[in-house]
Image 1 (cartoon, each protein chain N blue to C red):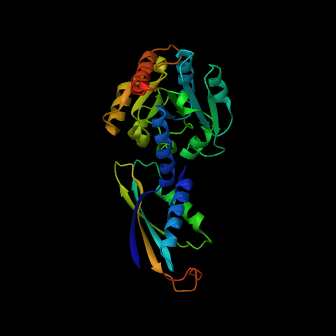
Image 2: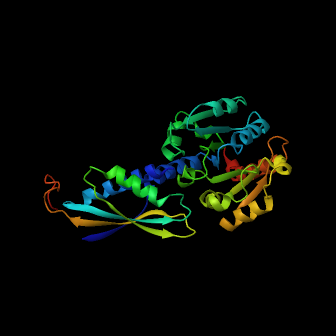
Image 3: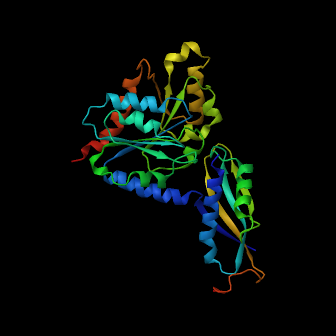
Length: 221
Length: 95
């Protein structure tokens, strides 16, 4: 019997494609954000408010993943920016190959920002690098404030947590300070924003966050 | 939830390694698995069993090095056993 060291990531094939995507994104000066959350936390609503607020000449595109239906792509296409639906037909996450395929035909050099809305799931999307610059985890106050402890991977690997639906705080038992403390137990450096897509509270902070991330990419000709 | 695709990736990695060791059979795969990797070990064992059943990789033993508060999802090692000659790939022969 012989033991040989492999020392490779299980998802090395996905990571290889993700690295080649990341290289393309960087060469095109494109900022890519991967939005992850449980189903129903308001990812699509947040993107609707975001696209709605962008100027018409903003060079932004969206990929939105779901197991079935193109409902989200239709919701998001109303704002006039390029949107494509990735229907995974059963898979509970997007992987790098799906993103690579969905980007076919788009001139990345004509874009500054690509937002990827992952399949609603706090577990599996966390494992698959899509070549993004940052993962964003969205947690709504209608979920539990202990979700960061229950689904640590998503909070550990994200650069930003958006606490959404804060207009509902008076009606639910969600302890927002406990949620933040739980998230920072898992990821001490996690940035946190609070938003409501209904009252639009906190959206300026979210737009500012994106703008700040976009700035280094702005040197594009 | 995605253990089946993780198991598929483990098997792909094993299959990429096999041709480098003619005449040997992979008997065990060692994984390093973080508590926060989002992978259920029992489900992963089951998925690997299903995917290897009836193939040349059966039986494939799984050794999991579980890491608390970590997100590792790595293949650390493979264990090879010399084949008894009844099921090796005779076309390729020894190196």
